[in-house]
Length: 338
Image (cartoon, rainbow, N blue to C red; front, side):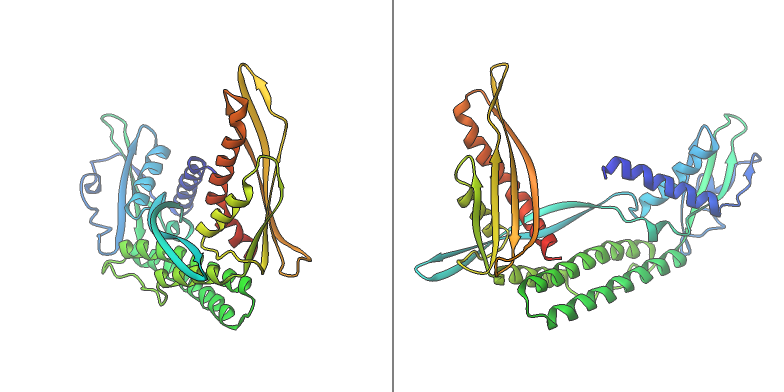
């Protein structure tokens, strides 16, 4: 779902929530105190509050709710996370592991547990310029309890995943459990940051699990997965080396046995249009069981490159395959494992 579309959904949820809970009567008398300062009836130690104004009442309410949401970043939260590229190499029988950190920014939308209880408490219209004003409030205790309940659920599911991981012997299933635990605790971390904003004391509810340690356990599990790479079809050449490189970058220790990660690239005939050459192809990867009897999962991507010289097409397609695999291979393998 596109971010802008999701933002519209969030605004709609906020507005509907407030409209359902609001019993505020529109006032047209003297300017209420809350228009210009903290509302006395909704003190900061107990409530989060925000105001909004517009030419019509509904838009004023929507803006008030939007401003309230911004206080604890309900709409869009950018969480900077440090992850690692892990590459393994063997030379004369000695294995070395290289780690390269990278900073990734992911956008997380967390709304349901945060908007529950938000409401329009008061409304006022300025009789001089006919501008509408609205006051949106959120009870800190009510919102905090909702988030704590959700965090407890995430902790319970994390504990279950870690118990599963401990009792399993299959390397792929162990990766699935660790991946699930990481996802759950990432979601919890977002809720914790929001809870610290809502909580007057700013403490929130610290987690039992350390995300950095969970991430490292996942990386270790990836390196421990017995994996070999094969190529079923290669219409441009060089795919075998590209696949091995992408698998190593994703954290896998590629060997001669174990699960089979297979890739194929089926290309169409090049097309010439207006002095440009175009090449389309389909890249597909499959994860096959250790006995080679079944396909655990597969994914494919359509690719397209262009060049002014036909001889450049294969090299550009190779570059596109390399880019796609380095972007998508790890996530695809984690989905296969789930």
